Length: 178
Image (cartoon, rainbow, N blue to C red; front, side, top):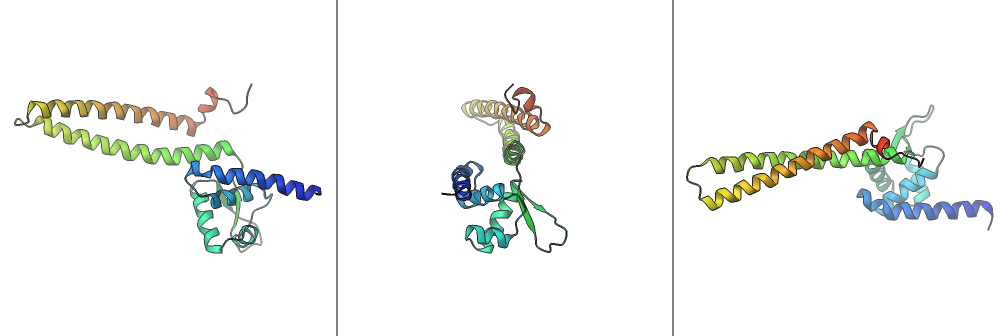
């Protein structure tokens, strides 16, 4: 086996591992394979280039690239003289993780906090009624305490996400061992 074949074999092994682990990001193996392929290309690629390289349809490539763009793992780049869209992988895995983490968690945090705050207001209305049975009142009080505790957790989680976005997390856990 010559050096070029050996290089391709090593790259393929890494790409395969990346593809298998992309489920952590909520994406399919084929999207992971696309990211891995783009990661090892030292120049931006068109959808046609990707189609040829991976043997997938142009529609599938377009959908996969869009998913990777939403995760900020791939970006569209401009090249003088080229009329086709070009794409390249984000090579800073720290930033890729931060972008993915913050996008997903901000969405989940907001949804949960909104629902819980609304639920607390509704429960407070129930408890303010003069005709509510004592057992129901106690259950409502317990639920309100649980939801308030959950809201405290989500406020902490928001601060954790803030530490990623600001880069302060790297003061606690440096990118490189010292």
